[in-house]
Length: 425
View 1 (cartoon, one colour):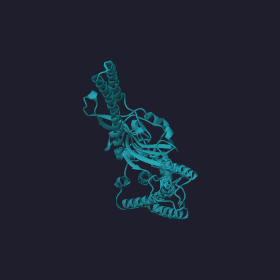
View 2 (view 1 turned 90 degrees about the vertical axis):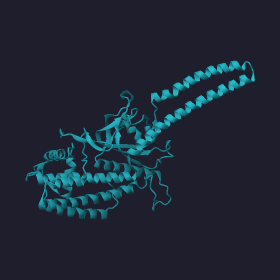
View 3 (view 1 turned 180 degrees about the horizontal axis):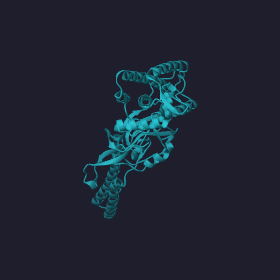
View 4 (view 1 turned 180 degrees about the vertical axis):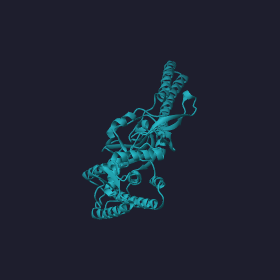
C-alpha cells in the first residue's frame, strides 16, 4: 500500500523532509508508539492496555535475551576482540573444521537476525555498482573481492538525504544537494587464508561493522582491502610537473656533456650540480605523489570515523536490541488496532495491513510497508489473537491476553531450562 503523505528522510543530524522508499522497518521508539496509542484510551482501558504493553515487552525481552546468549556462544570462537579462553580447548588452537563449522553457523544466524531487524541484503551487483564512482564526500577505490571467504552486506533505510557541498563551478558557495543514502549499513566478512591483509585481520575470525548515513556511491569505502584510486586531476598534478622536469633535466644533461668535453674543474662541478638538481626534482615529484595519496587516505579515515556506529560483538547487541523493539512495535500495533478499531467480527489480514499503514501515515507521516504476516504470526504464537473460519482476525481482550502471556512466559522458562544450548535459528 502506498500513501501520498510525505515521509521523513535523514541527514547526518537526523530526520528532515524528503522522499523515502517503503520498508518494513517502523522508525519509532516503542515507548513513543505506546504513548501515542494510549492517547486514544482513557480510564481503566488505558490502564489495562499499558499493563499489557509491559508484559508483552518483558516477554519479547526475555526471548531476545536467550537469542543473545546463543549468538554470543556462536561468536565466541570467531570474535577478534575476545579476551577469554575456552575451558574445553585450553590449547588455544582451534581446528580448521571447528572454525569452518562455527563460521557457517554464525553467518546463518546473523543473517536471520538481520532480516528480523528488517535489513535488506545487497547483492554483488549492488556493491559493484558503487565501485569506480564516488560522491562529493567520498573517494574512488578499487575493491579486490578475492580477499573474502565470505562477505555479506545488509542495508536499512533507503532514503534521500540532504547535504551541502562547494564546487568550483559555483564559486565555492554552499549548495544543498539530494544524496541517496543508506541510514544503516552492516558489513559481515571473513577473509581468505593467505590474503595480503592477514597481518591486520585474522582469517580465522569473523568481522562485523555497522555504519550510519552512507551515500550509496560510497559503499565500497566500507570494505577492507580497498586501494585508493587517484583522480585524473591529481594524476596530472603529479605527472605533468615530472615530465616537464625530465625534459628540462635532459636539456641540462646534454649541456653538461658538452661541458665535460672541456674537462675543467668548473665543468665537472656544473655537471654534478645538474645531476643533483635532476635527482632532487624526481624526489620532489615522488613526495608529491605520497602527499596526494596520504590526503586521500585521510579523507577515508575521517569519513569512517564519524560514520562508524559499532564493531564485532557490539554490532550483535545493537541488532538484537533493534530486532526486539521491531517485534514489539509490530505486535502491539496489530493487537491494538484489532482490539480498539476493528468491528466485533474482526478484520481480514488485508484490512488490518491497510489500517496499520494508514495509522502510521496519519500519526507519524511515515510511509511503511507493514509486515502483516510477521505481526499476525507473533499474535497467534502468543495467543493474543485468533483467526476464524472466514479468515478474520479477532483480538483477545486484555484480561484474556494477560493469561495467554502468562502461559507463554512459563513456556519460555521451561524451554530455556530444558534446552539452553539450542541455536538461534
